[in-house]
Length: 422
Image 1 (tube, rainbow, N blue to C red):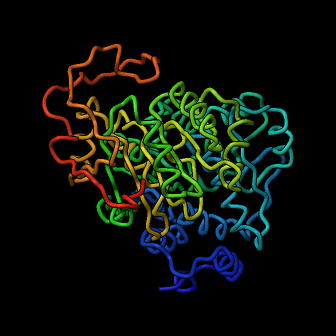
Image 2 (image 1 turned 30 degrees about the vertical axis):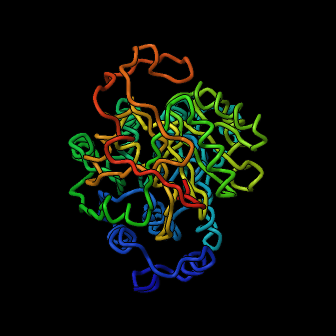
């Protein structure tokens, strides 16, 4: 089925076509007609499945022929958990909006608030915002919600993970009770159900989330290696496979910065993105990564749902994440929109419990492939202070495992030339 069969206007159809899309994804196919009908909607789908267009396209069409916003008023509000995601969603809204020509603004923390107050003086048809900065703007009387028609909660599960429940509840108390609410999430937990019950009116539930099908587009590889040699292996893989662009995930902010320093010493253009960097610096780094001037972007999990690079060939887990769900969100940065992707995890023996949690979540074993010259040493009991390879001793709720490591249990040594990438 094509986009013109699900009720979109000519202006949006032209914009969609120019973005290179011809066939709606399953979440778009189900969500767009329901949203156009005015129903409240709770949609659950994996990352990289087109959720943003699923709410943006009907939102723009519903707003197209309405009354222009008054000063400081907004007609549609999209809440997102992170600054990067807010900027990304706003960019997508503007791309689809080019022929409808509604006013679009984005506000988030980490940058000066005065320019954001200025852009809201005349009001906005669509405002994309992070919860904290939106509350700041409201308290400074820079934004009002009397004309609000549509509320969108994007990546609702991530907002709850980041502790925004109080902010969301406060924002809800400020909004008109008569409105359309669209909630989009990658998971459907008890907390999400509770949030939806309090914010949505008789919502239609759409579930097209299927992690197994989503991950089928992504080739997952596990390379056992000693923790101390992870950087060396990363550099080896980067040079051997001649990757033009790689997104690397680190568990810690200090670890990300140290890894960038080591990559730069190896003459590999790299930069980090994490919560300690200013928003200006984060924006510059993302732009450099997208335009290719930065070859390796090292990120913490704050960026796992905020980076959208077309045809990103490879994602590398330098460290396995604390939460198994973050593994899915990390590798979901590749293999998007039906394309194939590659996800590599550099696995050391101390990460056994994290690996087991990931395998339980995705319902499959990740077979190890030892890269020639990087065989890990037999596993030994480590001391608590050894948990972080960079000396950044953050609390780790998981004890160090004992017993046979993944390198001995399921790994197979690879001696072929051109050994598997990632």
